[in-house]
Length: 277
Ligand code: G1P
Image (cartoon, rainbow, N blue to C red):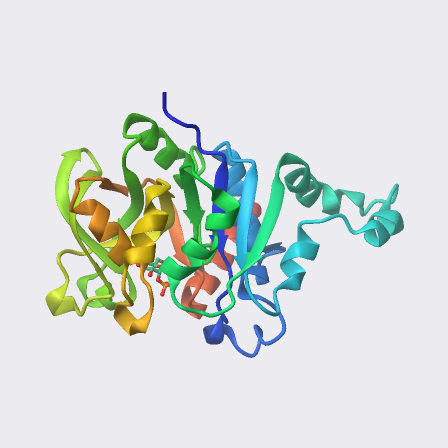
């Protein structure tokens, strides 16, 4: 029987240099789109997909993440039984629905390394990964929920979410090539981290949603540094793709690159309009 995915890993150790000076003392994952931190959107997506253990890989200066997903007794006491109490309803519900565990990535050696750092929190079971700065929205079914449904049919495979991008942007993403085996589902046979447009195998870019089988940890351990001298999850997945064990899913929904100022503003406008509809 397929193992149900209960854990979701959030790499959250990066410096957020593109958002300096805002990210000097505040983790980029805590920057709010409207009133909600980016990371909370990701956690809510994981909860919607049926996950209840949130494993967060943090780094120095990220203590506010732990405080956010905890009770603030002082605040609770101050606003209890006042008209402001409803402001805490959403975050309280998140805290009640799942548990949080943390580990620190001591050195920034790439996304593959960050995921490997999370092994101690995940253990020997399939898990999801959300990169919180890729903010996704879908009114009917969250992207991660769509992916878990595919995983249930292909339990030996890792799954990456993909999106068509303009070819000139391939150097910002992991890019895949594959054979479409069902509508919007590809069996991956090649993947390259941030290729120049002229070397890109397609215009299908990986976005920050993954479902990984635990064998990925051993593979990452064997994966040498790649693009930028970092250990890349894309390179580790290529090893499994060559064994026919990686699927890429062109998801249904919207995605905002909140790692860039443009994408962040776009997301803010989108959620503001949605809220005021
Ligand atoms: C990471 C991955 C890349 C992927 C991207 C999605 O890159 O390395 O393969 O396409 O996330 O957002 P980063 O954006 O962290 O540089």
